[in-house]
Length: 405
Ligand SMILES: Cc1ncc(COP(=O)(O)O)c(C=O)c1O
Image (cartoon, rainbow, N blue to C red; front, side, top):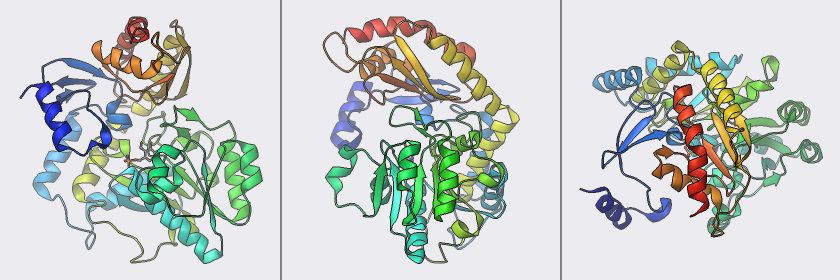
């Protein structure tokens, strides 16, 4: 079936929530993907910060194949060596004394569980408010959506669960709002969906101090920033280490290297003992296939030195791209990068960054645009300097094309 025909059939058969897909992709290897017509693209988006090892990494393929042949799913009436092993590995990376893990299947589910934990924590202590940030994104299920800020995502589904207050991502707003009525604060270290916006310097430190003195949980959504994306296992560790860990951390995306898996990590007895037996659950969460895929992903990140590589490649790429005419600046950390264009509109008055995405695709690059002026890349941590340099070299030509759209 041709690519065009498949896209027409997609429009007929699929719920239209994702709009029209740009391409029909049929295979991938490393940072290259191939469409149904045999055209190859450099994948700079990595399935939106998911494919940490790129496509078809041999260690990941081996782990998934071997685990599928051995034991794929058992339900949470049972545990498996893969599940316990992954939990211990994650707590080891975090350096948490008395840490606990809950596995699920996606980012929104991880935040849903964190939200329930915060609500329960507050209910027991008579604290009714949960603070979340303006421009924050935490997922699409109703609880996570209530934590999410964007009105266009929220309004069609109101009323949403109550008790959440969105505050500006400033230290002043934090100081103003973190009262004893607050059960929890949830933040992303870098707001990826909002345009790769890092928290202000010192924000997490101050949030840790204030949540601690108010008896509130500090919850960090590392769904997009976690598992090496920023050159560290956790983006929050840029500011918080040792005794200063968050109380709750949510993970998904890169954790499984392409296999669906999410996780909630808790630190200390308050967060770790809030949800009692029977208060939360999931059928698939932490099954041996998903946890084997995640373990293989994390082991390969270690074996191949990809934390260091993500950090260095990101720094070198940003230094180069910021020299390109038409680029105002760049934001982010490691290999989560927002490239900010000097202009926000094409010659026809259309938003420039989305036009850039289309022009980039025609030139053989997959990226996306979180807003009118910003293009985002979140490639595999295995991407090479040479592959990134291909994009830098082509950037002015793509931009010139985009301006005409
Ligand atoms: C910070 C953050 N939290 C949560 C989510 C939701 O994750 P999922 O799409 O796996 O439900 C996303 C997805 O983009 C995200 O970036």
